[in-house]
Amino acid sequence: MRYLCLIYDNEQAWEKLPKEESDAVFGEYFSFTEGIKQSGKHLGGEALQPTQTATTVRVRNGKVTTTDGPFAETKEQLGGYYLIDASDLNDAIQVAAKIPSARYGSVEIRPIMEFTSM
Amino acid sequence: MRERIDQVYRADSRRVLATLIRLLGDFDLAEEAMQDAFVAAVDRWPVEGVPANPRTWLVSAGRFKAIDRLRRRAKFDASLAPVLRRVDVAVEQPDVDDDQVEDDRLRLIFTCCHPALGMDAQVALTLREVCGLTTEEIAHAYLTPAPTLAQRIVRAKAKIRDARIPYQVPTRGALPSRLSAVLHVVYLVFNEGYSASSGRSLVRHDLSSEAITLGRLLVELLPEPEAYGLLALMLLHDARRAARVGPDGELILLDDQDRSQWNREQIIEGCTLVEKALTTGPVGPYGLQAAIAAVHSEAATPGETDWEQIVGLYDLLMRAEPTPVVELNRAVAVAMRDGPAEGLALIDAIVRRGQLGDYHHVHSARADLLRRLGRTSEAINAYERALDLNTQEPERRFLSRRIAGLRRVDDSGRTSAP
Image 1 (cartoon, each protein chain N blue to C red):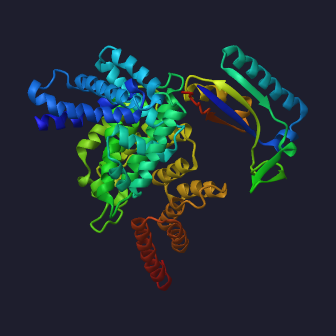
Image 2: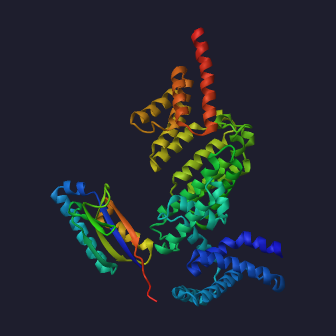
């Protein structure tokens, strides 16, 4: 079963981190990604640029409006994701717990909705 | 015969359900299959006689009823095809043996108490699926509208299915944290029944006994030290039920309880379980709290309480669960062992750190020690602070009585020299 692991981090804390510490976290991400690829559970994943680069789009009554920044002001921001293949939620929780940001921010696990064609 | 079937239903319906959930992979389908199986029993047992093993008969009947239902539905709904395939495989499996059935009950408990479900949902689902209470009964006990509760259960089942929460007993590595989540749910149910002491007490008493039944089931299925500890703790507290509430619904403190009203049988059972909790493995917070309750139970009068031992147990509890509330309770025990001044110093240290300032028990404990030290006006202030923060009616009445009593002392103290 496929799950999306959404990684939420505090961007400001992240920016304030001294270079050697952020390098260390990048290193952890690199080896986590290598490990999950080898386990066969990795289906995809990317890191995102910070929310200051984000644009939110809405269409109301046919009119497009764009606003600066993410939809909601929150303490933690979406910073990246992994798409994984896990046997069940317990398996997915085990994978998500190893994502480095789980120790600083949080990881939200969402099952992918599967549409079966008839 | 009807009676015999009712008896089997009471004793075995939850076991049958737990096994059917595993075989069919779906809560609602299993529930329907179980009901169908009992309907079939009402039909056939009077004719064919009660089968040698009613439980396996019911599981087997339930499987075939489920597959009939699914086949009929699949004719109209192609999306059921994968479910039907899975169930077909399940039906071909050999008959279930009793060990597996017991494992299924554990699987059901761990699934209902999965931490990915909200706490309210865990409690509701456990009472519904494991204890077999109806939605209406649970709603009544929690003073929640029945549709709200039904909705909560539906959502929880949907999450189990859609997020694929597995129907399994956790692996050894995950067991301690998952077991403590299960015990927490059981303890919440117990406290909901235990802490309400007036008006709704009758209904809520049922919750305490459901929690004790769950505790017994856990001890039977998973004899871990903390499972023993929790059951012991619940039995020892529940043993004081009759002595804890006065004729007008007033709360009676441990010191003032008529100890002859304590349930001795339950205390003896609780104490035996405490010993098991202390000897089967590393003791945890439930086992230690139960041990403290056991020491209280062994004292024929409040004056005979072994405070030395209680302080020692609180020292251990502080190591297992270093929270300000445990620290407060330890301070009260120290006050009993060494005197009110020593206890007061410890409580003031907690408050100075900025912790528990809004917790009414801190202020009533301080007030009690100040009262015993003869610092009457300070005691009145502390009781008033406790009264402001407390919302439980019987406890508020108790605090008001204490304040009134101290005011009289204070007035007479002013007119005549101490």
